[in-house]
Image (cartoon, rainbow, N blue to C red; front, top):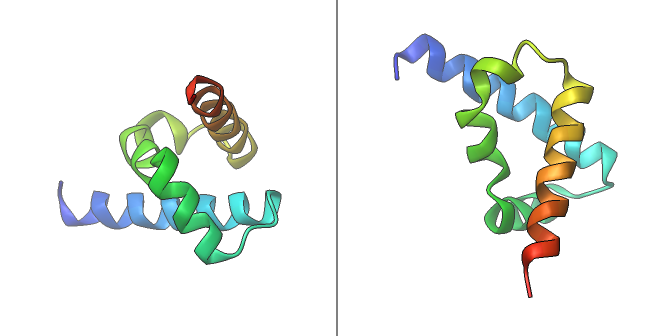
Length: 75
């Protein structure tokens, strides 16, 4: 990944992570634990191209849906 895109993706991940933490009243440590379980930052990296054009609320709604689906499929 070229450096500029890498920086853009990282900036996007940080911004969405902060808003996700705010939405769910999570501390940074709680977010890290959730990310380990549900791979939120990886999902944001892989989906960067469509997501960075979507708007933050749409991305947060998509993350909530993905996490809920993973929670419901976990025994």
